[in-house]
Amino acid sequence: MSAMFGIEPEFEEGPRSSRRLRRLKRRLRQRPDGELNIVSMIDVFAVLVFFLLVGSSISASKLHALKLSLPSVSPSPVVSETPTLDLAVSLFENYLEITNSDGVEKKLPKRDSGYDTAGLAQALIDIKSTHPSETTLTLFIAEDIAYADIVAVMDSSREYPVGTFGVDGSTALFPVISMGDAAPGSASAESGVLP
Image (cartoon, rainbow, N blue to C red; front, side, top):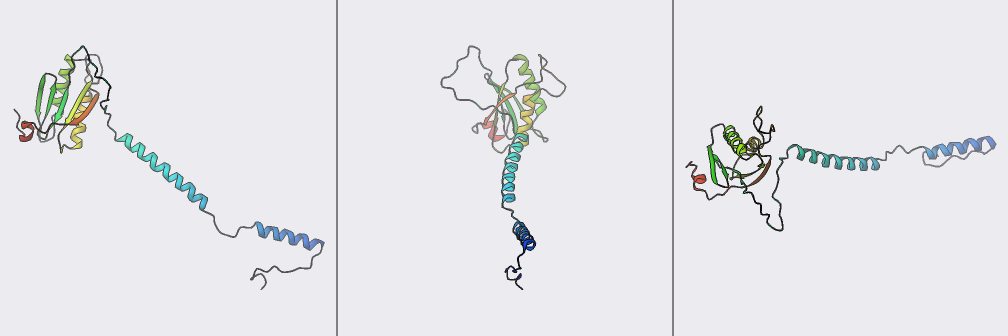
């Protein structure tokens, strides 16, 4: 009855019983109550979840990242002695257009299967043969162009088709690609008619 109310029974203390009693009391004090302290475990899991979320977002962004080189702001314009090619590929709804500093180089109509990436690659190979040191290309994209089409055009602009190589034996066509919005004012772009 006394154990039920938390009252310790009183024993007659002798030399042996008092030692045994002290040992028993010590064991009772050291014995856990049966409750689990999970505060520290929750702290560890919270930190672990944070690092897992950050790590997965970084690895996911690396998997889906396109390598682009954005134009840099320079304090003064750099004047070069050699004329630049200013090669650009513009994606419109019904065709794609290759232009350079001289004007329109080529227009390729869009097929039912998508943009003519093989024709684009061949046109860029011809340009690369006349300008082997050129590595930059600007990609202008009209509104409502599918992401898959943009990636396909970038892939065929970046490297030679599989199994072909450039004059110097490399596989890179125009690896440095910048992106921008296509000019909406083009009459041929709005009507979808190729001139």
